[in-house]
Image (cartoon, rainbow over the protein chains, first blue to last red):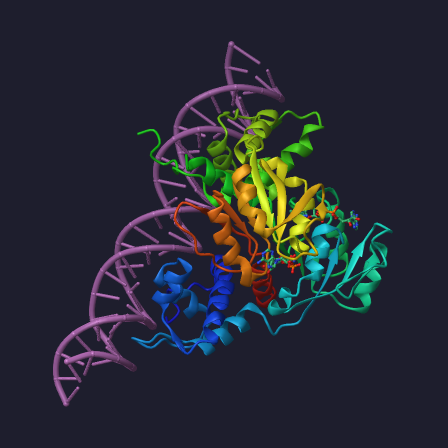
Length: 214
Length: 214
DNA sequence: GTTTTATCGATAAATTGATACTGATATAAT
DNA sequence: ATTATATCAGTATCAATTTATCGATAAAAC
Ligand SMILES: NC(=O)c1ccc[n+]([C@@H]2O[C@H](COP(=O)([O-])OP(=O)(O)OC[C@H]3O[C@@H](n4cnc5c(N)ncnc54)[C@H](O)[C@@H]3O)[C@@H](O)[C@H]2O)c1
Ligand SMILES: NC(=O)c1ccc[n+]([C@@H]2O[C@H](COP(=O)([O-])OP(=O)(O)OC[C@H]3O[C@@H](n4cnc5c(N)ncnc54)[C@H](O)[C@@H]3O)[C@@H](O)[C@H]2O)c1
């Protein structure tokens, strides 16, 4: 069997490394080099060279040439395609507070095929505002909105105590995936994709490393 | 040897699960139950019960009792202590833009012992402002500031292309750890702790899951 | 043209992390 | 008091991920 030792799915860690490969490769685009080797990428990004080769093999069809490496342009295209730059997912964001507004204003998600088309909030003071060209509607209007415009990804940036309620609402609105920035576990039916983004949890790791340094 | 099978260090995944245990345990605080078992925590947070027991054993000294489980209050204390709620790390943030302001305004980092005491920006329009009671200074003043007030953690929320420059500056200012929200690999000398928070990279995972659902 | 060499791809080994199993034990029920 | 049982802690197994090894090969050097 040909695919004996190939992992049938690319690991989340590999997926998280792809953007770093991409941004590094893009810095080479303006230079005169057109090939890059796995060992160089590895040393540049502080990774193992075998790992780099495996990662690239997993997502790109291009073969590396001995003594030269991989063609940069092809790699860039393949990574971008894999990352989803040319899918087109509609997203809505619930909770147009501090974090929500930052996400709404961020243009970097388009490179991943995500287009946040509207925001929702329960606070009348927030409703009606325009953030980076995106309107904030009242949460009551969410279901109707999604009936008219099918939405793939729901983004939760409400306080933790309200997150489950919004999660239920988004599922009712038929979103396929939820990107949750509230630091709580959400209960969801099978089939709905959940991606938790627990920003503060990283501090646990930092604290641990700081503690063991002394 | 007694510690034969104990991992000598708690894994990052375990560390990332701790906040979820904590928030779940806190929801029980106001109820009448005072003990909680690993299987219940596991089913509540969609984890394996053995994993829960191992995680708790790794960070808590308390022993669970057969048929009852773990004393909730003790667990809460132990997790909080481990997470770093009572350390006191001074942090500064560089790049008081959309994301930077959201982080400055967030009060949840105190539970992890982080106190962001000031922000810096190179844009005159941002300098002088007050965000959630924290002053924004010009980046030129950063080194002097850190001489007077030693800072443990530097937070980078500048555009990707400026991140390395700010990283170098923070290292010059003698920070012990850098929490980097720019989607680039930073070059740092050994000894400086780097925590990358690549928010957009999560979209790669979401896209992948969406794609394989069909 | 021949040799040298850096890098590839594939396979194997090692490490790490997650899960299953088992005997011990404290609690609750009889 | 005795028995039944849920849960614990420890050990073993399994799975996934990372790292090492090695023969093959295309490019560069001679
Ligand atoms: N700000 C950060 O840097 C940061 C960092 C880590 C995690 N988070 C998490 O992100 C979430 C948002 O944080 P934030 O700082 O933006 O908070 P915020 O208070 O600034 O914003 C929350 C917004 O949600 C709205 N809201 C509240 N309840 C709602 C409901 N039921 N329906 C619709 N909208 C509702 C509020 O009106 C507000 O606009 C929180 O869960 C927080 O824990 C934020
Ligand atoms: N906003 C988001 O939701 C989001 C999401 C993912 C990643 N990020 C990353 O976070 C970083 C900040 O994003 P943002 O949306 O807040 O951008 P932003 O443009 O709103 O803010 C950047 C801030 O940095 C300041 N700045 C620029 N160069 C500087 C320098 N050399 N020294 C000091 N300050 C400088 C700017 O004046 C500005 O205030 C970026 O690297 C971005 O890729 C942001």
